[in-house]
Image (tube, rainbow, N blue to C red; front, side, top):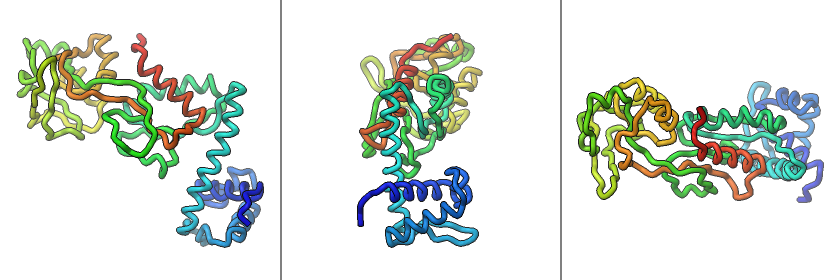
Length: 302
């Protein structure tokens, strides 16, 4: 019998909760059920489907191969059910549920953080699971709703929504520029102290100007790090010249802490964009991305 009845739906939900919780005891606590009831539902699901989903001992629990496949389908099913309910609530003026978001650290701190704080008042039934990292993410493996990215989009098989456009340009503190007068071309900075992101260290930079393109090799940067906010702050302190996305320097320029050294030259044109696992994005994801887009395209507040 392959009919999807309420009993099967409930057991699939319980199975998903068991795996996410990591134990029957923790799953029972989350579900508000006794451990014996949760165990009974798991056995009933395995008997119903005629397969072993979990290998269990007193100290260990692991998915079988077929259990991994059933889990992936159960997650999609539960998410779809939550989306159906959430859509109804959205029509009634409510946004609720769990939103799983991945973002680069700097973008998370500067853009996502104030949105989350604001949404706690606007949508008190909305919860967040935030993964802030500059490394790669896997939307499906990590069950993410949204992954925010900065760069040049590549074909990933996921749905892409562009939130803002930006450029990478050269910035420095006013104090440092006093020691490097008359800079009119990137070539004038070949021997300058540079602060470089680890991802592009030891690469040749290509800068595009009003009517030409030039290459600049930075052989001996004074600082290399994987954190763009560290690079910006070091540039503010006068430690060197740095290439940053313009949005990262907007507030510092407004406050007189950084100067756009060559405003007509850029290293790259960038997109700030979101990756979504499906075109059928959840209402909570759409509301969140609308807020991110508005934040990215609004001048910094004093």
